Length: 194
Ligand code: 5GP
Image 1 (cartoon, rainbow, N blue to C red):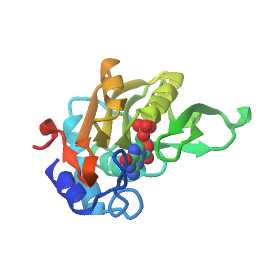
Image 2 (image 1 turned 180 degrees about the vertical axis):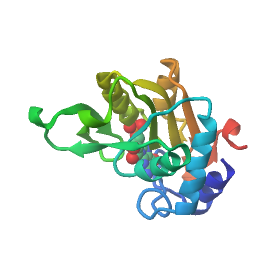
Image 3 (image 1 turned 90 degrees about the vertical axis):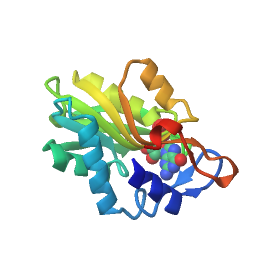
Image 4 (image 1 turned 120 degrees about the horizontal axis):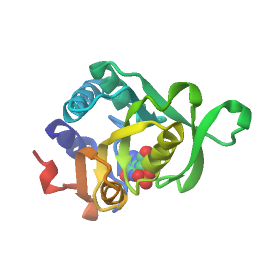
């Protein structure tokens, strides 16, 4: 997605050979016009699917998810990160190890908002090792929901998440695939340059 590539080139900061900072438009300040285009692009890529629910994880997955939800008229459920869970909370829950924070969080979704009739599209801001997506897939499985695919704003192709998910037969659509962050420079995967 050219608009996203341009934005990453202009405003992305390479923090290390594995971490890209995009807090001027996605992770802290949000660019609503770009998010609108991202929502539109996800809607186009998954236009062959009936989606009853968009499932993401707080907080940075919410903005692109809501823009997609507006396009396709589907509600957005975001998994919450919690320190501890009690059985009385009526939750589906899973554990997610955070690549950037190096800590493990419990994530949870109320049983009221996901069930076996749902066709779910999972959305997230970044795909690195796939831990966040795996947690959301686990929650969807607990609900008995069908997952039609995964939409990612920025995939880091040099980490294993995308490969692992695709090997499992899961459809992953990434709007930008970063091939390398070596030498402080962002290089995109060739197939994602169009
Ligand atoms: P994964 O669970 O796939 O290992 O990592 C994805 C999650 O970690 C995303 O939800 C995102 O919040 C965070 N993340 C991973 N890599 C990066 C990165 O390079 N930059 C930023 N800003 N977040 C990242």
